[in-house]
Image (cartoon, rainbow, N blue to C red; front, top):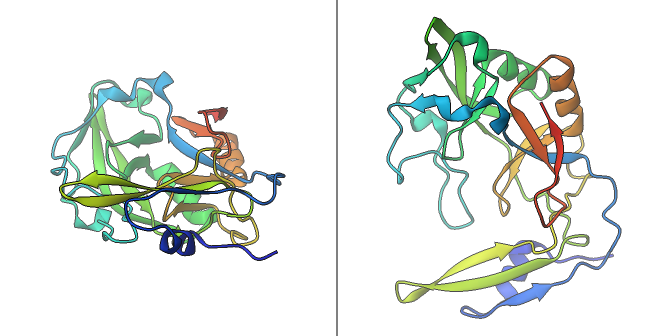
Length: 228
């Protein structure tokens, strides 16, 4: 069955208008990838990024029309944790598209999916010592959404006398598993998040990784699948 790419959908919608492209296959198939974020059970607000860059300079994934800002552009992060080192977990969100992860988690991801992260190393300072950490972003930016199984809505918002295009997924996202063979970690050009394979999540769990919450991207409402 032929399918439109999201780029082709965008080209079909006149500026200032909106259009919904309904999925043609109702069966979502096997869900192999989940959205990961920090686990609030561990009070991640105790982590402070003291030299956080300005909003225009912070790392982000980029769009079809605005370039990516890599973690390689950062000054080495000056990060402290307001607690003992034993309470530091392995993953923290940063308010940008970068994440702070422990050296243990970094090495696990590198082992399962070599080269899938861009990173800069730093020392996280806890009250009783320092720990090796990394500021990371997925280096792999894919167009991995299966548009046969995903409803896509193209919208335009008025902004400063012009229009700002938005790509939305009102019924959730289904990825193309065939395209993602062998991939453990990535982000998507039109659906900004960090996605892990279930195999990576299972391995992280088995190795005692802490601080990760995993949610289903296929659900239009936030539905938690795993919590480490």
